[in-house]
Length: 476
Image (tube, rainbow, N blue to C red; front, side, top):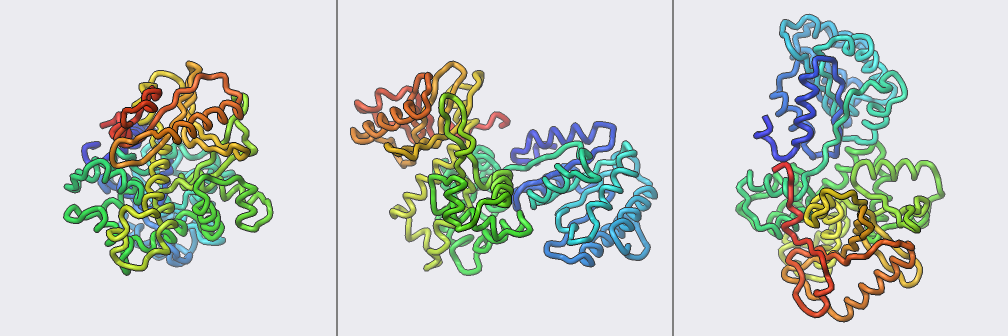
């Protein structure tokens, strides 16, 4: 079955294990819009569902009941429309009891958050259905799916009511990594060089739907103009749609993301409050946590004496599409913007920043490239706001009391370390050692697509990670 998929190896093995468990299963699959949740479930089960329903985005209670009833009809129901959700799930129970098929009874409810309209009682009815009937039948495999990540976590996975601890397994579906992205593009007949795939990832991330919009007969620049910069382009409204799908009230989340988008190094909570002109509150804590859970931003802390300074955590925007949108959305002055602005200062600055984000997102691949698979390591970032100000986005602290301090540079050829840059690096290392009080040995490590040009300054570099190392995928 795995031969039909790009990536998703662990998810498929888990689904297979649960499918063969011989006991009732309640599985929640969640992840951002367009990441491939529906495709994974439909392909894995080959659309062989005893019951399958999909919520209507922005639909009212009556719309959702209509969609659910229509799915009941497909499953064999012939009666009237249920008046409420308790009655709807009772009808589902009766319909499934009357089915003639044997084997797994797979119940699939997609876009689950859409069904939970205000004061509808949907979650209460779902909990009653599972607790009083589905959980007692070993053939039942209930799988629910949703893009509204915070809703899925609060109402299903971490539910404190009737569904508390009822989920037997949750699956968070992440975007493709670079290696999986390369495999996906090849499956579409797109034979691009890896540097072009890296730049594709900088704009679109590893989101399968976004990647599906690429045309092999066009260059990358032509593709980006067509799907983003031109009038009525497929992704021209995707930014707002993404956050609306993730959060039922997206406005405060958009404010946070846009504030972080203006400060590429990251911001503390207090800096965010000042930038957004809002008072300190528990709401901001919850919103930041939700954005972290969605992989849109990351939280990192500096260390002192080997201990993280949790209260001084920094937040940084790491979602590739959001970063691309916030950098270029106000530059929609021409339908061929990207083709006309290659190798310009604004584009080159963004390329360097996005490549840093790629390296942070591919820590497993960097660990492998450095030969550290068998040793315990900890990845973190560091920032010093006092003189001399400095920031290091990727630090690898190893169990053998060594630290790989990573310098990340994006280039189209070998990178040349200059005398001035060598001095800056030594100053940064000294500031790091002084601020963190580390007793570990420091190993300057460079991550750059084509390696370092050999000169008197490169000789001191013991470790390098090249672009090809970022494409490593142990499952391929």
